[in-house]
Length: 382
Image 1 (cartoon, helix red, strand yellow):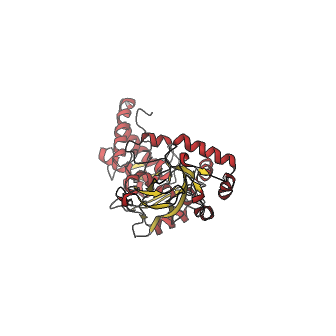
Image 2: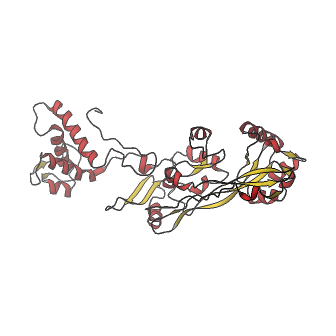
């Protein structure tokens, strides 16, 4: 009358810290009610449904779904029980044979910001399970879906353990099977230390409240990202509990697109700061010298700089649109050309190559998914 019950021991997912050692992401316990359809024996199904707060039809639908998955392997019947549900059913499990509690953890976020960089975890999909050649994951497991949670999934997830328990026909545990000879311990995931400064991140997010855009703060000497803001954002904690699906849907239909990771995916015109790059390209190509003066009268393009003669220093100092209009034309036309269209094709492609060497229009290789390169137009674009 004794059977062996296999219990999956889920590891603690690795914690995330900022560069100063402040905890950014930690774990909090939750409890899933698991079912093994072949073993289900319930005297009073209505009472069972009452404890969980579900309808009889819902109960029957879930049993059918569990049978489709497996009649002998456990699957989630009710995920992430509330504290009240857990308390009400914990001491009654001996009456509901075929059901047991599985403890695991979900993410808890210390700050309401940084959501687009941190990403979130969610239940593994059927397609992901089918594509899992490692056989590490099982139905109901959580996996990193986006952001750092996805990029560092292999390091953060840890290693699942397993224990075998002897239980009698009433489902009461009778001790370890063969004194734990076949048990394996779970191994916690590795912690991740971010380059983010949590205090600076909070300050940058306050500056972006009520605005749409992005802020990235870098340490110039190393390229380390100190702050990473996509605005508007959302509280990452709303994508951790039982209400994940409705909360995600509300974010997905939000017209301000809080799920859109603007620092990585949005494309912006660079503005006047780009004139410094144009200066370096022009000097490198020797289409202008640092001291050469070019007359600008504001007739070529709208300008905030007054008319007059400009050299490179004054052009940058006053951010003269007309000066850089003429400098750019020289770069594209390769100086003074008798065949402007042919040479312009060569000139714009050479210009594009220079710009990309500054890291614009190409992926920078950040350790976050879904980075888009932007668009630096070349001759083929035109």
